[in-house]
Amino acid sequence: MDKRKVISAYRRGFITMQECAQILGIDSVQILGMMNDPKMVGPSGPWQKQSAGG
Image (cartoon, rainbow, N blue to C red; front, side):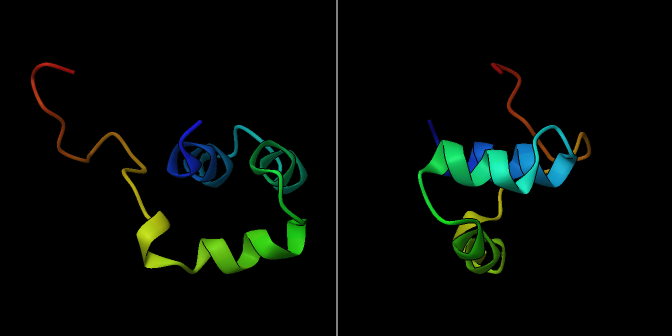
């Protein structure tokens, strides 16, 4: 599973931090470092541009 999608689900409130860490297979403390990583920032809302093809 794409790490960005898991982190996006956490940021949207669909999963908890513990669930996010478990899915990614890392310690929940490491999650905090990933949250600040600019490479992990992805589309996080309906206002983001999407292609017409989906």
